Length: 86
Length: 86
Length: 152
Length: 152
Image (cartoon, rainbow over all chains, first blue to last red; front, side, top):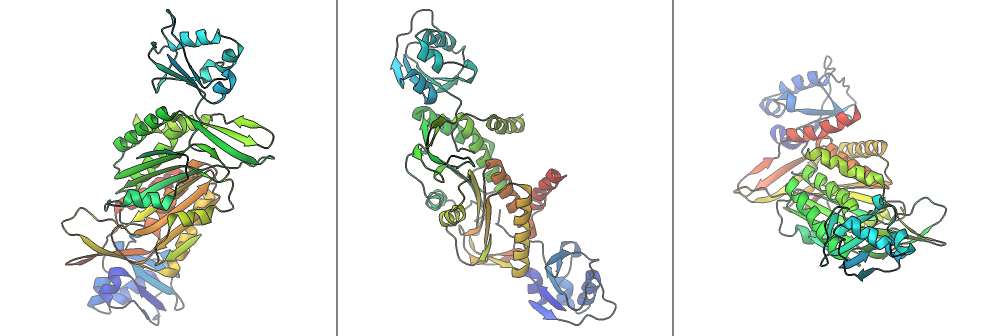
């Protein structure tokens, strides 16, 4: 599975992305977040405040219940602030 | 008094404007229209359909009751169609 | 700023002149009105815009002032051409610059709606075989009514 | 049409390319978003726009498609820059061309509102002494809600 981290989540985790193999029993975005947070403080910090964390699975907005598989691309990012700074 | 005619009103009357002296008893826009219409068929036609006729006295939108005097500029024109042709 | 002119205008240049010196503008909404060729059997040769210069200027200044009272604008610009134009020519340009985009959008639409019904311009369409004065549309008056409701 | 680019854009040129061949366009509404310098004690040095390229493209195509389903448009264009920008730089350009001006205004504002909340862009502000990620504003979500109400 391909993971991507953007904006301050990337800064916190210290990686812009990584490849992982999805362990058995991790079948949703929510379960993936729990798994990643268990990897240490930088993940804990980067993926804090779940309600402000946005997730996309294969380029589509997803939520905690969205099912995932090993062939997916999952991106984690903060609420978007595009367009312009008004 | 200075009179101005625009768009198809000018085409009908055959003048883009004229100077007239306001006779006694003509004290409003409505009375001025009656006076002008009495001048002949071209005025009758140009100033027909009073509800679609727009009038400005000294550059401000006016109505039939607007008072006028000999020093005023009075313009007659159809509903405006500016901006663009959408 | 108000400009009434025969000449065409360059949108980029007008925007950059307007924006120079405004560092707190977050967004600019603009509207460009063009001479439109209707789906008709007859192609439009030209559109001639006649206006009442002194009154047009006065009305446009008034419309711009009202927009600046209703919304928080850093700057605004209205350019209106007159004279003989051909299909696809630019007729009118309205630009409103604000710190916040909703102010820019609303004020720009407001100015265009008012301009269509208050500014004394008249359009004469020239086709191959005839010349025709364009008649006012009631939908333009309807467009104005929505702003009255906002005001009340 | 969607363009994601580092380079600046010229509004006049983009408009004339978009409009060439559309003789029935009566009006074009555009929005230009700029890097804004806030009234703060500290001047803004730069704004860096990061994005998620594949997803951004997909989201912008979706937003444009939705706008074209809701309103009658002759054409539309969304240009969004990314990378490092400085105050007063152009960030985003949205243009919608229609036979009728209300369709142009509404669709342009719709696209800008959706773009602000759906397109995966993040902004990092660089000041003399600090660097700061810009946080999302709830007023952007509010701006979206008005379109939901229109839809219902």
